[in-house]
Amino acid sequence: MTETPASAPAPLHWKLVIDAADPHAQADFWAAALHYEPEDNSAFVERLLELGALPGEATVEYHGRAAFRDLIAVRHPDDPYDKERGTGLGRRLLFQRVPETKTVKNRLHLDLHPGEGRREAEVARLEALGALVVRRVREPAGEWVLMADPEGNEFCVQ
Image (cartoon, helix red, strand yellow):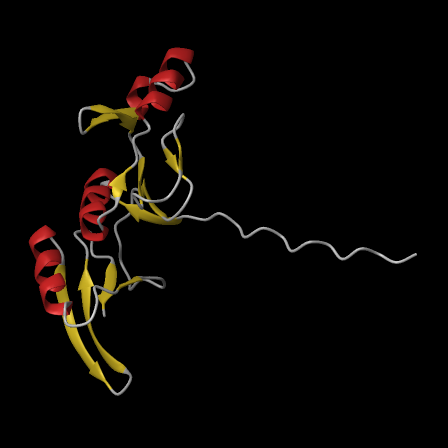
Protein backbone atom coordinates (compact mmCIF):
# COMPACT_ATOMS: atom_id res chain seq x y z
CA MET A 1 0.00 0.00 0.00
CA THR A 2 1.42 3.35 -0.93
CA GLU A 3 0.98 6.29 1.35
CA THR A 4 -0.23 9.59 0.09
CA PRO A 5 2.23 12.34 0.88
CA ALA A 6 0.88 14.57 3.60
CA SER A 7 0.24 18.12 2.59
CA ALA A 8 2.64 20.68 3.95
CA PRO A 9 1.56 22.00 7.34
CA ALA A 10 0.16 25.51 7.38
CA PRO A 11 2.55 28.19 8.65
CA LEU A 12 2.10 29.02 12.31
CA HIS A 13 0.45 32.24 13.38
CA TRP A 14 2.71 34.20 15.75
CA LYS A 15 3.05 37.50 17.59
CA LEU A 16 6.06 39.10 19.19
CA VAL A 17 5.46 39.57 22.93
CA ILE A 18 7.36 42.37 24.67
CA ASP A 19 7.54 42.78 28.44
CA ALA A 20 6.68 46.30 29.58
CA ALA A 21 6.24 48.40 32.69
CA ASP A 22 3.52 50.38 30.91
CA PRO A 23 2.08 48.30 28.06
CA HIS A 24 -0.29 51.03 26.86
CA ALA A 25 2.45 53.65 26.56
CA GLN A 26 4.61 51.13 24.72
CA ALA A 27 1.71 50.31 22.40
CA ASP A 28 1.26 54.01 21.65
CA PHE A 29 4.97 54.42 20.87
CA TRP A 30 5.21 51.34 18.64
CA ALA A 31 1.90 52.02 16.88
CA ALA A 32 3.26 55.46 15.94
CA ALA A 33 6.75 54.14 15.15
CA LEU A 34 5.51 51.39 12.81
CA HIS A 35 2.34 53.12 11.56
CA TYR A 36 0.39 50.24 13.13
CA GLU A 37 -2.96 50.40 14.95
CA PRO A 38 -3.57 49.64 18.62
CA GLU A 39 -5.99 46.74 18.82
CA ASP A 40 -9.51 47.56 20.00
CA ASN A 41 -10.51 44.73 22.33
CA SER A 42 -13.26 46.81 23.99
CA ALA A 43 -16.24 44.71 22.82
CA PHE A 44 -14.52 41.56 24.08
CA VAL A 45 -13.52 43.21 27.39
CA GLU A 46 -17.07 44.50 27.90
CA ARG A 47 -18.52 41.04 27.21
CA LEU A 48 -16.11 39.43 29.70
CA LEU A 49 -17.06 42.04 32.31
CA GLU A 50 -20.79 41.41 31.73
CA LEU A 51 -20.28 37.65 32.12
CA GLY A 52 -18.32 38.16 35.35
CA ALA A 53 -15.33 36.43 33.72
CA LEU A 54 -13.10 39.49 34.13
CA PRO A 55 -12.93 41.66 37.25
CA GLY A 56 -13.17 45.43 36.75
CA GLU A 57 -9.71 45.95 38.26
CA ALA A 58 -8.27 43.94 35.34
CA THR A 59 -9.34 46.71 32.94
CA VAL A 60 -8.39 50.30 32.18
CA GLU A 61 -9.70 52.98 29.89
CA TYR A 62 -7.45 53.28 26.85
CA HIS A 63 -8.21 55.90 24.20
CA GLY A 64 -11.74 56.23 25.55
CA ARG A 65 -12.59 52.54 25.52
CA ALA A 66 -12.33 49.52 27.80
CA ALA A 67 -9.07 47.60 27.56
CA PHE A 68 -7.18 44.91 29.42
CA ARG A 69 -5.04 46.45 32.18
CA ASP A 70 -1.96 44.30 31.67
CA LEU A 71 -1.73 43.78 27.92
CA ILE A 72 -2.38 45.51 24.66
CA ALA A 73 -1.30 44.76 21.11
CA VAL A 74 -0.66 46.76 17.96
CA ARG A 75 -1.27 45.32 14.50
CA HIS A 76 -0.51 46.08 10.89
CA PRO A 77 -3.52 48.01 9.54
CA ASP A 78 -3.74 45.92 6.35
CA ASP A 79 -3.75 42.54 8.08
CA PRO A 80 -6.95 40.65 8.95
CA TYR A 81 -8.31 40.70 12.47
CA ASP A 82 -11.01 39.01 14.52
CA LYS A 83 -13.74 41.68 14.64
CA GLU A 84 -15.45 40.02 17.63
CA ARG A 85 -12.33 40.17 19.83
CA GLY A 86 -10.40 42.94 18.06
CA THR A 87 -7.37 40.66 17.89
CA GLY A 88 -5.01 40.85 14.93
CA LEU A 89 -4.46 37.76 12.81
CA GLY A 90 -1.29 38.95 11.12
CA ARG A 91 1.73 41.04 12.01
CA ARG A 92 1.43 42.25 15.60
CA LEU A 93 3.30 43.17 18.75
CA LEU A 94 1.79 42.37 22.15
CA PHE A 95 2.93 44.33 25.20
CA GLN A 96 2.44 42.64 28.56
CA ARG A 97 2.92 44.21 31.97
CA VAL A 98 5.72 42.72 34.09
CA PRO A 99 6.89 43.88 37.52
CA GLU A 100 10.63 43.89 36.81
CA THR A 101 12.46 46.49 34.75
CA LYS A 102 14.67 45.76 31.77
CA THR A 103 18.21 45.09 32.97
CA VAL A 104 20.24 43.64 30.09
CA LYS A 105 20.56 43.90 26.32
CA ASN A 106 17.71 42.41 24.29
CA ARG A 107 18.38 38.99 22.75
CA LEU A 108 15.80 39.78 20.07
CA HIS A 109 15.14 43.13 18.42
CA LEU A 110 13.36 44.77 15.51
CA ASP A 111 15.17 46.19 12.49
CA LEU A 112 13.24 49.01 10.85
CA HIS A 113 13.80 49.66 7.14
CA PRO A 114 12.49 53.11 6.18
CA GLY A 115 13.88 52.95 2.64
CA GLU A 116 16.86 54.28 0.73
CA GLY A 117 18.03 57.70 1.91
CA ARG A 118 15.37 57.98 4.65
CA ARG A 119 17.31 56.73 7.71
CA GLU A 120 18.10 60.12 9.26
CA ALA A 121 14.57 61.46 8.81
CA GLU A 122 13.20 58.27 10.39
CA VAL A 123 15.64 58.50 13.31
CA ALA A 124 14.53 62.11 13.91
CA ARG A 125 10.85 61.07 13.76
CA LEU A 126 11.43 58.24 16.24
CA GLU A 127 13.34 60.57 18.58
CA ALA A 128 10.35 62.93 18.50
CA LEU A 129 8.18 59.97 19.57
CA GLY A 130 10.44 59.29 22.58
CA ALA A 131 13.16 56.96 21.30
CA LEU A 132 16.84 57.57 22.02
CA VAL A 133 19.85 57.11 19.79
CA VAL A 134 22.17 54.65 21.51
CA ARG A 135 24.89 54.74 18.83
CA ARG A 136 25.51 55.02 15.12
CA VAL A 137 27.14 51.94 13.62
CA ARG A 138 29.38 51.89 10.56
CA GLU A 139 30.83 48.49 9.68
CA PRO A 140 31.94 46.80 6.48
CA ALA A 141 28.58 44.97 6.51
CA GLY A 142 26.63 48.25 6.51
CA GLU A 143 25.40 51.22 8.49
CA TRP A 144 22.51 51.55 10.93
CA VAL A 145 21.42 53.45 14.00
CA LEU A 146 20.93 51.56 17.24
CA MET A 147 18.04 53.12 19.16
CA ALA A 148 16.07 52.43 22.34
CA ASP A 149 12.32 52.76 22.81
CA PRO A 150 10.92 54.65 25.85
CA GLU A 151 11.46 51.60 28.10
CA GLY A 152 14.99 50.93 26.84
CA ASN A 153 14.31 48.11 24.36
CA GLU A 154 16.88 48.24 21.57
CA PHE A 155 15.99 48.34 17.90
CA CYS A 156 17.85 49.31 14.74
CA VAL A 157 17.05 51.69 11.90
CA GLN A 158 18.75 50.47 8.73
